[in-house]
View 1 (cartoon, rainbow, N blue to C red):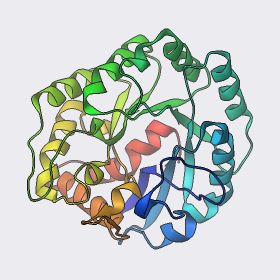
View 2 (cartoon, one colour; view 1 turned 90 degrees about the horizontal axis):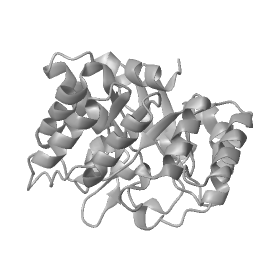
View 3 (cartoon, rainbow, N blue to C red; view 1 turned 90 degrees about the vertical axis):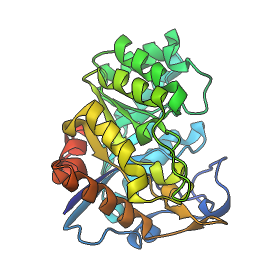
Length: 292
């Protein structure tokens, strides 16, 4: 099994500052910790690093650090932190990203929208920044909550040349293994509307975190089915969301084997549906991010 993790986080609080880190996620999660969170049976493994929301002034430092450690983490592409609504500061930041030299290239950016005011992605300033991504040949990771999906659809319509990938299926409410929820009608409708834009893909990631670490393959299957129906098999990317999705239990504790469990659950689901497992676990992410 080849495994290209499309959504890997890494952080080291001794190197960079993260205002949001707390509890079991507060320690370092970097090369050494990742080595204990492998996936059984993966004959080849690589990853796309997605910015871990260090403070904005350290976005470039984060890219440098991840590139330095890539030989030990398998990172082959970096989704860097960026604010797209800063006007000339956005332009300068994107130019600085393009000028960075290192072992791993920046393949996309993420302006984390999930805690931003609604309609941020529709603002003129944001759309100008999004258009600049196209000029730099970069992709955009859209991390939003379920009710913000229409904002991503409007972004896709406004900047049709920008490749966009939806993180974590748009963070739908899925309940827990003991009390599962069915996909909400509004989420299903908004997901289908977003998928109508051919430059948009979706990451099969983050559902363990949305379930608070208590999930089952049967519970998440309807949400994976909805993504497959909306986007088709060629726009589905597996991602671990490690280590955020590696928390479970009450109180929450870190579980190294959770990355393997999520990979196997998605592989088993895809196989049962007659989908190309290798495409979902490798090819689709490689094509979207332009990596080998």
